[in-house]
Length: 110
Length: 115
Image (cartoon, rainbow over all chains, first blue to last red; front, side, top):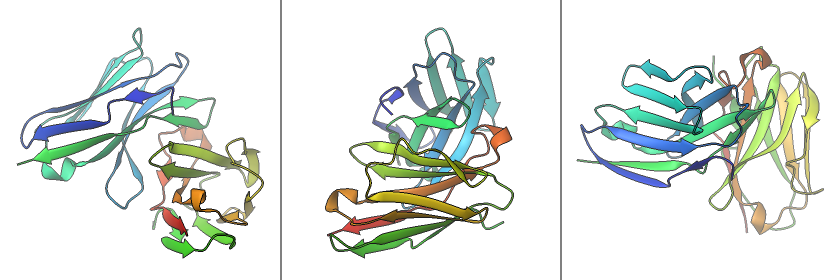
């Protein structure tokens, strides 16, 4: 996962917005993804964006893609305690292989 | 749909023992992946099957690791002999290969501890 980088920790107050950033290296990636992992569970696909898009919004989630800078971000509006988890950025390599970042641990404080 | 099913959920074994992890993918999915997650190395792809055939096993750490997929609804990952450094969470994931990663569904994982 060294080719996909993300900060390791984020602390946010309940009700505020969270922004998780990610940089990737493969400019030929077709899709970029955000996964959420809650304690003791597997990864759950939150959202994904096709590489020819700049933005995708899905309820409280907004994904921004800057293809020139190879920068991907996930914004969570009105962050809730249930949003506390590890968030993984991933890019696809070849037709099947996903390369994951190390994950950002988001802690929501009251 | 029960999702991707993995067993056991937890396994504690002693060094040198054989360990077998099991996975049942989602019905209709034709791609299956085994990942390993550790604090030090994050998520690593171990092996990828497509239509029950191993396509990419470049991530398998060494000969102690082997994986099989005898049919579309079952796969195993075996470690023989196991070592303490194999301690990790092992995830199985499946997808329909026409969906790219958008349809990749992960199982709950098997937490392996080798003493």
